[in-house]
Length: 154
Image (cartoon, one colour):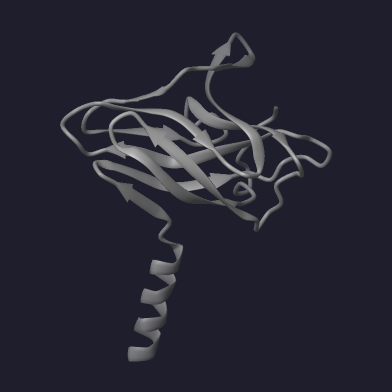
């Protein structure tokens, strides 16, 4: 019984994938596999939480897997999803911002000019630059969305 409990405890901690940097908690950074032959990809987060009493902003990001990373805002325009680059992602004090794929969030990080497509199971480092919290490196997991979850199309 003790070994089973230890195994279950180990599984839970192995699946924990969040990073704390000052008052900012970056919860589960992930990317979806990109289509073969494309040079773009997208990074999402279960959430980014600002636990502090003052607002912060995500100003930029960079990674070795893409020449550029842009912060994108998504919004429905009739029946069409429109994306546009924004200069920063606002993180109000003591709030949680969702950056999930498939319409569950309004923002994501766009990976541009990638040398090769992202494949399920890949992992890569991503450096996030916050206005107040500073710079934090996180590890992004590439994973296929659960069945029924729409994929991000570029």
